[in-house]
Image (tube, rainbow, N blue to C red; front, side, top):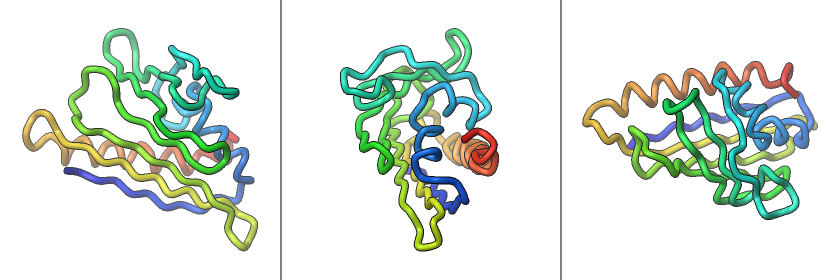
Length: 140
């Protein structure tokens, strides 16, 4: 199993940080990849529990389903389409800091399908997420 853990503190209000991660199209901008919601949640927020986003272009893309959603606090998702990853699970927690900033704790765990590719996927994914989170204040 491979794990990525990113713990960042941003000088942006929690509700704005959460919105970037929760809104599927804005999440794609954070990743630097096209993303769109292909299924709405049946909850109040169309990006919430049960919503599905597609990340990528055409047939080369992944579908992720939101499996945990607490406004301004938590997003959990898993890949629900054919993928080079198995047992994928992403969890993003959002907290206020005593200084009035927002702490984002983002963890992803997965297994690889093709042996020994997980290390490469982990490195590329982590690098992309870290770069995206650095851009987040501009996206918020």
